[in-house]
Image (cartoon, rainbow, N blue to C red; front, side, top):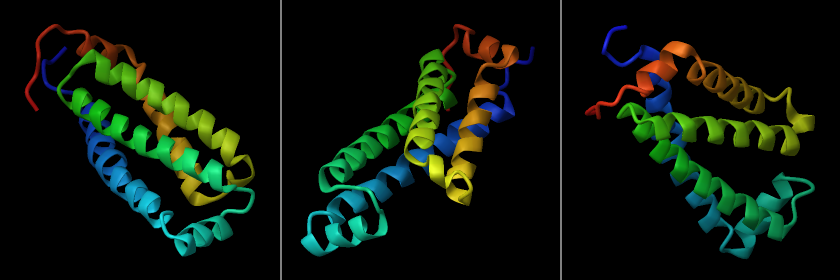
Length: 143
Protein backbone atom coordinates (compact mmCIF):
# COMPACT_ATOMS: atom_id res chain seq x y z
CA UNK A 1 0.00 0.00 0.00
CA UNK A 2 1.28 3.46 -0.83
CA UNK A 3 2.18 5.63 2.13
CA UNK A 4 0.25 8.63 0.72
CA UNK A 5 -3.04 9.67 2.23
CA UNK A 6 -6.05 8.14 0.44
CA UNK A 7 -8.06 10.68 -1.57
CA UNK A 8 -11.29 9.91 0.33
CA UNK A 9 -9.57 10.63 3.65
CA UNK A 10 -8.52 14.03 2.30
CA UNK A 11 -12.01 14.79 0.97
CA UNK A 12 -13.97 13.68 4.04
CA UNK A 13 -11.42 15.13 6.48
CA UNK A 14 -11.44 18.50 4.73
CA UNK A 15 -15.24 18.63 4.51
CA UNK A 16 -15.56 17.72 8.17
CA UNK A 17 -12.93 20.18 9.35
CA UNK A 18 -13.88 23.18 7.21
CA UNK A 19 -17.46 22.82 6.01
CA UNK A 20 -19.32 20.82 8.66
CA UNK A 21 -16.94 21.82 11.44
CA UNK A 22 -15.84 25.44 11.18
CA UNK A 23 -18.67 26.81 9.02
CA UNK A 24 -21.24 24.68 10.85
CA UNK A 25 -19.97 26.03 14.16
CA UNK A 26 -20.30 29.62 12.92
CA UNK A 27 -23.80 28.93 11.62
CA UNK A 28 -25.00 27.35 14.88
CA UNK A 29 -23.38 30.09 16.99
CA UNK A 30 -25.23 32.65 14.87
CA UNK A 31 -28.46 30.72 15.50
CA UNK A 32 -27.71 30.62 19.21
CA UNK A 33 -27.12 34.38 19.39
CA UNK A 34 -30.22 35.01 17.30
CA UNK A 35 -32.29 33.26 19.99
CA UNK A 36 -31.05 35.77 22.57
CA UNK A 37 -33.60 38.30 21.35
CA UNK A 38 -37.30 37.53 21.85
CA UNK A 39 -38.03 38.39 18.20
CA UNK A 40 -35.32 36.07 16.88
CA UNK A 41 -36.46 33.26 19.17
CA UNK A 42 -40.07 33.61 18.02
CA UNK A 43 -38.97 33.67 14.37
CA UNK A 44 -37.05 30.40 14.73
CA UNK A 45 -39.85 28.72 16.69
CA UNK A 46 -42.41 29.84 14.08
CA UNK A 47 -40.34 28.26 11.29
CA UNK A 48 -39.99 24.97 13.18
CA UNK A 49 -43.37 23.54 14.21
CA UNK A 50 -43.30 21.22 17.19
CA UNK A 51 -40.16 22.79 18.64
CA UNK A 52 -40.45 24.28 22.11
CA UNK A 53 -38.13 26.89 23.59
CA UNK A 54 -36.20 24.52 25.85
CA UNK A 55 -35.88 21.94 23.07
CA UNK A 56 -34.52 24.67 20.79
CA UNK A 57 -31.86 25.53 23.38
CA UNK A 58 -30.89 21.88 23.78
CA UNK A 59 -30.74 21.39 20.02
CA UNK A 60 -28.55 24.47 19.50
CA UNK A 61 -26.10 23.44 22.24
CA UNK A 62 -25.94 19.91 20.78
CA UNK A 63 -25.35 21.29 17.27
CA UNK A 64 -22.60 23.63 18.49
CA UNK A 65 -20.82 20.83 20.36
CA UNK A 66 -21.18 18.41 17.44
CA UNK A 67 -19.81 20.99 14.97
CA UNK A 68 -16.82 21.65 17.21
CA UNK A 69 -16.16 17.91 17.60
CA UNK A 70 -16.55 17.41 13.84
CA UNK A 71 -13.96 20.11 13.22
CA UNK A 72 -11.52 18.46 15.64
CA UNK A 73 -12.15 14.97 14.26
CA UNK A 74 -11.66 16.28 10.71
CA UNK A 75 -8.31 17.75 11.73
CA UNK A 76 -7.24 14.44 13.29
CA UNK A 77 -8.37 12.58 10.15
CA UNK A 78 -6.18 14.81 8.00
CA UNK A 79 -3.26 14.11 10.35
CA UNK A 80 -3.87 10.37 9.96
CA UNK A 81 -4.75 9.75 13.60
CA UNK A 82 -6.91 6.73 14.39
CA UNK A 83 -8.86 8.74 16.97
CA UNK A 84 -9.99 10.99 14.12
CA UNK A 85 -11.34 8.01 12.18
CA UNK A 86 -13.12 6.64 15.25
CA UNK A 87 -14.47 10.05 16.21
CA UNK A 88 -15.74 10.57 12.68
CA UNK A 89 -17.54 7.23 12.81
CA UNK A 90 -19.16 8.04 16.17
CA UNK A 91 -20.26 11.48 14.95
CA UNK A 92 -21.67 9.97 11.74
CA UNK A 93 -23.73 7.46 13.74
CA UNK A 94 -24.98 10.23 16.05
CA UNK A 95 -25.94 12.35 13.05
CA UNK A 96 -27.76 9.49 11.31
CA UNK A 97 -29.69 8.61 14.48
CA UNK A 98 -30.50 12.28 15.05
CA UNK A 99 -31.66 12.79 11.48
CA UNK A 100 -33.88 9.74 11.60
CA UNK A 101 -35.31 10.63 15.02
CA UNK A 102 -35.80 14.33 14.39
CA UNK A 103 -36.57 14.51 10.67
CA UNK A 104 -38.30 11.22 9.91
CA UNK A 105 -41.11 13.12 8.21
CA UNK A 106 -38.58 15.27 6.33
CA UNK A 107 -36.54 12.50 4.68
CA UNK A 108 -37.58 13.75 1.27
CA UNK A 109 -36.10 17.21 1.81
CA UNK A 110 -32.84 17.65 -0.05
CA UNK A 111 -30.96 18.92 3.02
CA UNK A 112 -31.98 15.97 5.21
CA UNK A 113 -31.49 13.40 2.47
CA UNK A 114 -28.13 14.88 1.49
CA UNK A 115 -26.88 14.85 5.07
CA UNK A 116 -28.10 11.29 5.56
CA UNK A 117 -26.38 10.08 2.37
CA UNK A 118 -23.15 11.91 3.26
CA UNK A 119 -22.95 10.31 6.70
CA UNK A 120 -23.80 6.85 5.37
CA UNK A 121 -20.95 7.32 2.86
CA UNK A 122 -18.65 8.33 5.75
CA UNK A 123 -19.62 5.18 7.66
CA UNK A 124 -19.00 3.01 4.61
CA UNK A 125 -15.69 4.64 3.62
CA UNK A 126 -14.06 4.80 7.06
CA UNK A 127 -14.77 1.12 7.66
CA UNK A 128 -13.07 -0.02 4.44
CA UNK A 129 -10.03 -2.27 5.10
CA UNK A 130 -7.52 -0.11 3.20
CA UNK A 131 -8.64 3.02 5.06
CA UNK A 132 -8.48 1.32 8.46
CA UNK A 133 -5.02 -0.01 7.59
CA UNK A 134 -3.79 3.45 6.61
CA UNK A 135 -4.93 4.93 9.93
CA UNK A 136 -3.34 2.12 11.91
CA UNK A 137 0.15 2.93 10.63
CA UNK A 138 2.15 4.24 13.58
CA UNK A 139 3.78 7.32 12.07
CA UNK A 140 2.39 10.76 12.87
CA UNK A 141 1.68 12.59 9.65
CA UNK A 142 1.85 16.32 8.94
CA UNK A 143 -1.14 18.04 7.40
